Image (cartoon, rainbow, N blue to C red; front, side, top):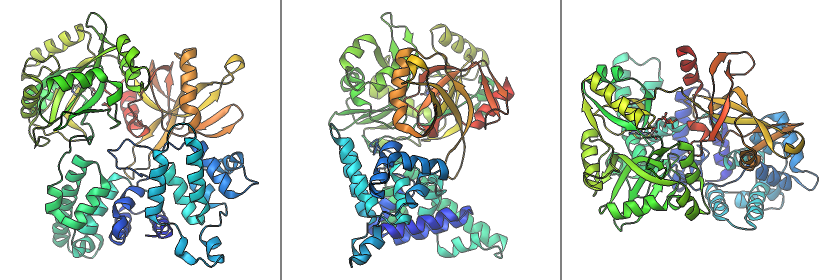
Length: 585
Ligand code: ATP
């Protein structure tokens, strides 16, 4: 598919606001994508790599602005691009406002559309760019990007710029892609029409909806186990439902973690009568994969590969496990007496790319596994928790300290006693789980409840900052924080809720500046706008209603605790959670 065609279809989808119509346009695009189907299914979400693959393009706004400036001509600088961005508000519009030559330029030389960019070419150039590393890689990235922009017309430039910054903004979220895959290749056209047509009788429409929902559920299951929209789109088209039912977990390919809601023992026992109770370890989530050959890989909750940062966990698993397996758990840190250390200590280990050996001496980490998703060729996602936990004990050995203790109880006093014991031992609370529930990847449903008696902290996205004064002028000092606004369409919005400047050491200021500087989108005087990507954990005394910030709330006495390296802007706390917390104060 020509990239120009992709851009035209993306523009059409962007202009459509009705959900069903978006799904329909997207399913048409998928049907027409032929050999490029898997690439197109990722591009519409602003992704070059599958969701399970932690490879990134590693292109910050600065680099992208520079490439646009180069393609725009010798009189244009990155600062000019940023000025236009301040005016137009979004990088696609800025890229489209320059004349890079593109298709028209080539046509003028008699090359016709022949030399226009194709979707496959954009994909392979961006993949090559992602592979560039080491000294000179910035320049290589810049050259590749510049080369691509140079060949675009304004419509293509709009979507190329958004794609490289992973912000497609066409109103297509994961749910939309899932529905469109089903509609394109599984749902009968007459059913799709019956759902859309207002004049169809209710009975026909209900039956059509049921069949469509079943098709969507089949696609959803394959997506849950694979996290690969491109592959699932192709399997749906080429092999239909039978192919989808064959999509299995793959050792070495991370799965989204199942998440928990806040809840109490009373909630749990009312709902399930018997609850599975576990210690809530104050660590960082880790998914352990051990393959047939004995190789171990570890993934963070972002599905990022953290194998190299945690050699002692790798060694432990190599020793303890002798069959292929996928385990879910927490990495906890210990002091010399075996007492749990705070969570921030572990994140320091997760982040570590150099000096792992030295860090290993300073912060000792251990695995606490609480779930088993796959063992010896069996996918266990749909098995009840109790069965999965039994398998976990077989995989790691029934007496292993690495296996969580699971108490099955229908007695409130027993659960309360378990909780006090956990807190006394220095843990942050307990988890209450439905013993019969399946493992639902990526889902924050009612089957897992977390109970933390202490004051909650918030995980907020940094969307702005201010340069410091005097000796701190080279460092970003005050950080503007925002909450995520849940949006089904997948284009997250962020609303501001406060600024944080306390709790940050001089050393941290240097680190935070290094982390955030490449994400700067705009500067005006001392103030900068920052692309939402970095998440801070912050403490506070109270959440107050306030007109000062766009969320309608402000934090009283916010203080910086840590960077949540294991979270992305999309998994930061939502405004909805803040509203709930504010109400419950
Ligand atoms: P969330 O993970 O829910 O988005 P969060 O990262 O701030 O939020 P918490 O609210 O503290 O974490 O609690 C949920 C997390 O607790 C889980 O994601 C997991 O990493 C961790 N956890 C610790 N012990 C367990 C356990 N026994 N079972 C499941 N999760 C556990």
